[in-house]
Image 1 (tube, rainbow, N blue to C red):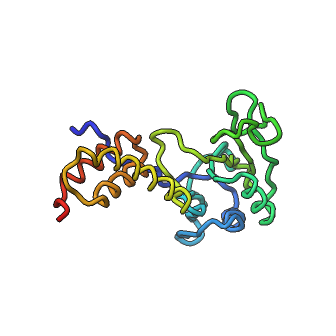
Image 2 (spheres, rainbow, N blue to C red):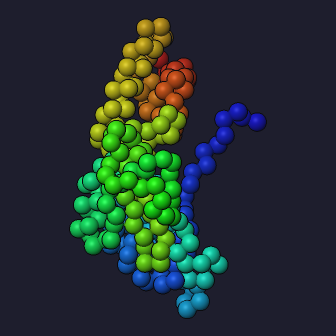
Image 3 (cartoon, rainbow, N blue to C red):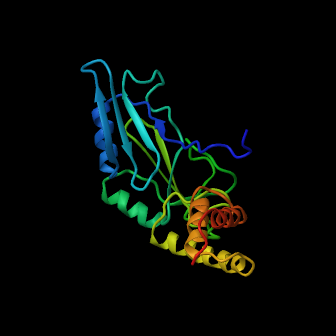
Length: 219
């Protein structure tokens, strides 16, 4: 058995709702993509929608789950600019909280411990918004500007990719001094994929080196 577990990616979160069309309109108003709307007629229905840039989706429907509508509390959405996100949500007509941080700990599904304003130290993972869907399923919007080690890169935009390529460049420079002849892209590609999968930099260097060994040397 391999010591490294196979990728097991979170695909779908189930939302218990009372009115499928109402929920579909609400999440559509957030700009979420409609992936599928399945139905057998009047008895059963399932709708899948995906937030912009998210690898995971939500699924809700009729006769789909026995869980009470509104009982999904503290679902998390991650953004890189909390103020810009709030302005967009307000413009879309969403009843969203002011920006807040927590004095101590983290609480979902209630307003316990909330302090107005973004985190005074500007720390990643520490500034929030919240809103509810029409059934009361609650959402936490969390600002993440720097990922914790091993957490991967869920939103590979230009800024994030630029920083990652510079990181790969530094790692390759350190590796290249004692490495066999190779093309830089063989190291970079494996390094970037490893980091995107959530591996720490040291592990990504090992993946880069292994890939160099497994491909034809540069001519």
